[in-house]
Length: 362
Ligand code: 9Z3
Image 1: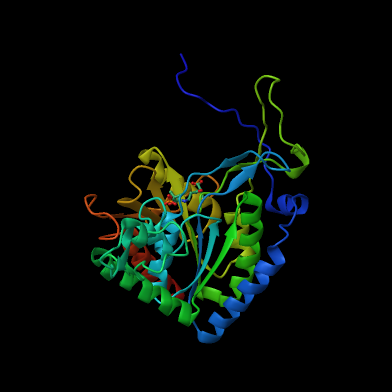
Image 2: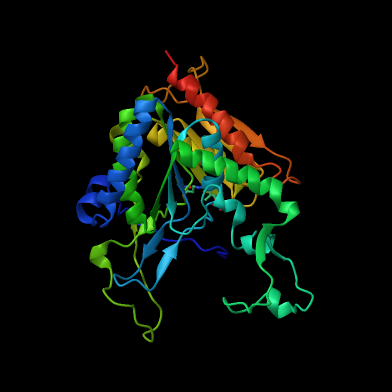
């Protein structure tokens, strides 16, 4: 008896060209592109390496007047954390993220895990007649007897906040972080194409770090209902098309000069290496980082083509050499958590070393 759900697939696949020829350009694209182009030109003048970090999940709207949508799992932790470490390594960062997902620096004070109101205190010099109401008045118009409140940061939070704030201000002063947002998978694809083509002017100094969780399926505009899908007629059947595999045009057309790192997310760890190899074999980019959902904060695997084709390389039946791949695991002690230790620090260090070696390759 079949005990697991096996979806049915047909072979309808949109090529990237068909996708862009049939799906509408987001209204904000040209403005976004104008700003990001200025940023890239400035980095070229200053000779900096630039990394495009994508982060957060894409949505797939089910209606034109959207009420319902499918979403992809991602809080944006991987992308936002990695962006900070790339900045630390001297890169300029284009941070392309899902609207309202985590962002570099402010991610340390997320409203759900570390709300900033909880580490602020109201200190006041209390007049002897004061009541709790005069210190914490609900009104903005305290009575004349009220103490003059001062807002301070709890002692236990100060050192960490100062460190985050200093780096944040330094990055702002240097102008090395540019953020822009997407919501739908369509926004994501259009932005990615436009930014990568522009970044190609950086030559080998461009790195792409695709940590966003991108939908594999979408509903073409032509098949979408204009208004909210009505209930009351039984179950809902939606047939979705496959999102084009954008790593292919990335490598061949949009960003052939860049160093490209993609992520592979699986829930079955045994699939990580085979799927990562498969992606490298298909698209020919530089690194796939395999992460499994439950251990992604402590363990990842970097898979890349072997440096030299070894003598043991096999000739396939068509005479093509079967590629050989290298894997290196990065692990941190699972008992340590942010901010003590973050795996992204090690991942970024390793990628920067590989990017430099790749720039200097003969
Ligand atoms: C990832 O695998 C990211 O590491 C996570 C990060 C989404 C797991 P969080 O934001 O999670 O820290 O909560 N991103 C890539 C996922 C993806 O869509 N990969 C595609 C695939 O696996 C290909 S690039 O097929």
